[in-house]
Length: 393
Ligand code: FEO
Image 1 (cartoon, rainbow, N blue to C red):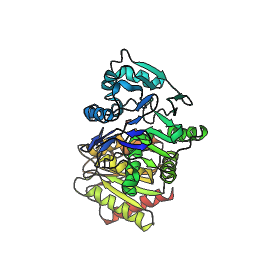
Image 2 (image 1 turned 135 degrees about the horizontal axis):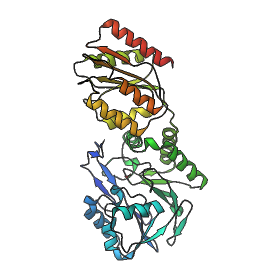
Image 3 (image 1 turned 45 degrees about the vertical axis):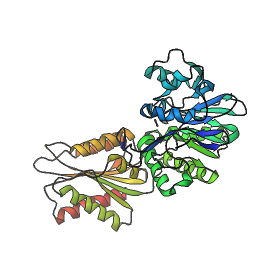
Image 4 (image 1 turned 60 degrees about the vertical axis):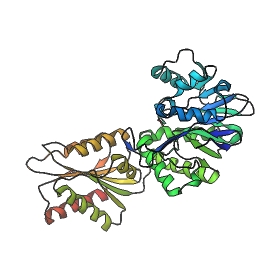
């Protein structure tokens, strides 16, 4: 794939990781991309690197436009290794280039790499650097996704190079959102937000508000993963979605997550589902035996009600349920109303560990529900009554 011009004299020079199926625990069925951008101006500027194992392809794509000896700046928007992995290779080829990053970015680069001899321009929110006909403006966005994260705005092109923000793990033969089915791109952007940025809603709200106060007039958002949002309509769509997700507002839906050994916990999950359906509340049900946690967590953005069911194994949480709880607690979803449930053979009580997770997250909840062996119809009726209590909260 050739370098592609996204604005006059600004090129996509990234790489497509078609075979990626897992990104630190996050399932990526569509692969991913590590986007990088080359701005051909008086001071030629490269924005973001790529994962180290795709270095050669990235370097060749840059070299198809310009020789490394001409690079003046390398902007490091974020030091996670999917964007910085080959920065040392770039700096070997372009030792004259200065790194533009923020204080936390410089510290992180020095912690990861041998940076001897590298020169820096350290920037913070509101700073700008002229590169000729263009002005680069910077906005630090700590925790979106690491403390070092920032975004770069190319003022004259109304272009926001947003790194992890607004991205999607999605590889395709195009580079623009309008070349792909919009519903799939939005689903992947939502999945990306849920799995990467969920804990940082407050920081996302602050970044959106800072972009407003800086008066950024954005016509194109080019993230460092997935496709580019182009034109006011697409830009408006993703900004609105981020504002909604960051606010913690939900759509009042229900999500049931469970695992089962001999069908007892599955029967309780099915009864809960029927209760929500009878109440006219949209509901989804996920069995952890067949679904990756990163698929399940996407529904938490829309859910008011969360139900988690566990089959007791050796007086412990079932391992897949324990793993899901750890993943969920790390992502820290807010404002949920919850019910823990499960089944046991000879000793009850394990379900309290799920309740404890709800309490740690500060969620409202009703009393957990447990049943010995297979729930008969009277037990299922009692459980549905507990779900009705939950709906009333
Ligand atoms: Fe795409 Fe936080 O790295």
